[in-house]
Image (tube, rainbow, N blue to C red; front, side, top):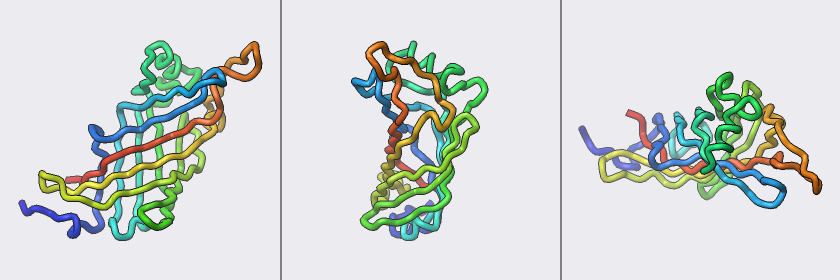
Length: 185
């Protein structure tokens, strides 16, 4: 097997390295603080040439039952029919529709996000690193992306009014992705 240098990589399939990646979210709680969490089980496949990323595609699948907010009772509630209903909807999916370059390794990744069989367009503000050759002869690159969604647009409507005004769970949810991509075998 020959060692592949970063400059030899062209159109390839890339996968998310789950041990060096995280998909997280944040949402207001009781109108006073931000609760953060992540999904611990996900996969992704991208196909692109690092020199022409705008011609590529990205698909990610998340297992919503892997939600982790560091509170088992809250995680159980989030898995229930009040929120993700993981028994009926075992996957959250993102599929890119176009990638718009903004220069300096930054891109707007347009795509379709599906939660609970509701699909809506989203745009991920994304930054990519240069491709590097890892110590094992493989090629890797880093991806960081973020967006914000209105959870109610995806059928995540449960809430509770607060006596002092406001609601228990904010409607806007920030989503972040920090991932290492590796060339698929």
